Image (cartoon, rainbow, N blue to C red):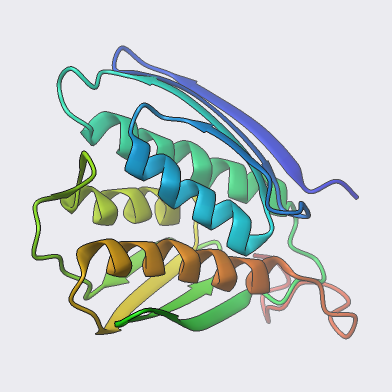
Length: 195
């Protein structure tokens, strides 16, 4: 069974193509026009062992908002499509991930019901050309487009780069756990019979 998806989204603000393989090996090809964002997506692919291709032509002459938020929407749709009917998967995933002084908790539920909650805050307005307020917008977009519960808690951290990178890597590890198969689960892990 192939758990892959290729999603395209074209608007007056962005043209985006995302290709995702949930059963990959951590390979990525990324071109969003925002170096730090590419770095974060590379960490997501590598640590989740997902194969990920992202190509974005966005209105960066305005700012980074549309590029990052719309990439979140398209990645979320790709996650939803690649996960398929979710039969046999664990559904839940969580991790507490260290990145030097930063420690971030991420929990995922592929419930079919979107919800996003985070207490992570940043002290710098941007990191490498990426507005830090866009971290929330990205993950919010991913959670709603994929119809997952997504929670973050910052347990420690002072370096904005480390905190942000810990979030992307923690999300990768939690999602990898949630989409992994468990031989004991014969259908979907829900009393409703569907997710």
